[in-house]
Image (cartoon, rainbow over the protein chains, first blue to last red):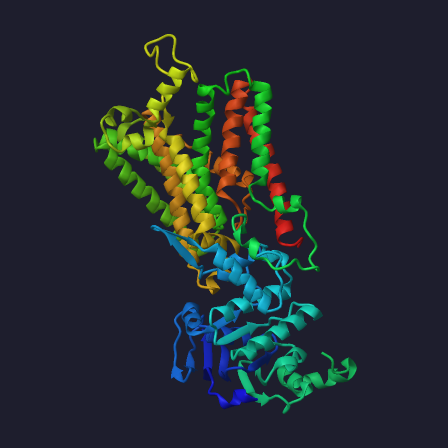
Length: 263
Length: 377
């Protein structure tokens, strides 16, 4: 994998995050390089959400260091992180269903043109760019003013990913993009991840589904009880081992037999 | 949204997997559709039942246009705010409060009318900002916060004139406004010469008796109507064509999703509360200039009428979807029905029955439309 020749875009070292007496993150180290898909696996309550929010500028870490392209970085808001090139696609909050695909795609960064002192949205440019970007991701829209609500869950995720890529994301954080999707939609999102990675963007793929992770991941990091339990490269670890680490070790073993290892 | 259609020409060849949707369903997705149908129905109804009552001569048209324009002014504010995902129940009280403020400043304290108007606008917009600020800071439903202001403002509107003037109606504003430069912007009329010309041509009638004999029965378009049309135009443009308009939809559609992509949701919402207060203040100023007096009970129930007009116009109570043009048509339906019942000789209390019934139908229709847009979920 050529991605290992590169230096990490984002490197997080020994991140801790406390909310009052609650220790949500207790020493997390993680990095992502250009053109790789780094999977972050963890069960519910492992601290995945807190970690994403720390990385995307919503939370400030209590302790620890974030390096962005080798320099120490401290984001004051999600906007700062976004400007720097860290884009986050949240599972439920990616899109506004009542608005058109174009309006969603450009939300917050609408292209404008001026006539005299009046500035208005350049819908012609916005619509054609949206159609173009969606076609690149393999989605043929009926029309750019189609409401996002008419798209399937997988297509919505793809619109959000296409948006992030279009606006120059260097790192794309995907928060459980496949957890609410059916088999075919999941396959679509996974192939989108693959396309994005080929563009040289670093993808952080958060999931609790080992099979989805194994399908596209280059490296795997498991988060358990607020700590990272080390990072493995593709081919160095089996799905069963990942599963056990996520569950915190032994308790899954007894179940494995009866479930046939297909959790 | 309905106004983003120019790019359709760039669409690639039709995807064979997508079923062609019927024209009817596409039309249903326009938020204004219900209001357009309603407007046509209402006009057809009164043309049949009140066509010969004078409702559609120059005076009659002016009569219901003025009433509709009143509804329209507050509906525009309520519409923008509702699309941004919030309500303002204090609009009616704000109308009474603003009118009373102008009266106290100009009549009781003897300030020039234009200063009274400017200061009142500043106070009202500031109260709107406070409303909005409390809503976004506390995260409380705007329903509760503005309900509190409904009572607070109404209370002050009764308290101040009683303490200061020992009565609840203050008159004499028309006398104070004589020669003022700003008052005619709200209370004046435009197009006088046009109507004289139309009367000369015989298109509109002239008075045949009284001290205004020979003058046209309609001597100009009230500024109230001008304000209504200008506000509708500007609000519609902002909503459908500008960046800020997209943020209004986004703030109401899903505030958190909008924040994540950098939309300043709180600022948008506070600005919309301020705009609603501004509209209420325009309404109050026009009313005070027209009547020459301010009363403590002015504007009662106006907040609900505004919200009903907006809902008839196709906006969703949950925010993120709606149309200013629809709300304006909703207001037109109101004005025409309210005055039309009078022209048709029907007991006017039936207007409230009509309001209730049409509100129910509009909400049911909107819920259905919402299901279509969001893919039957």
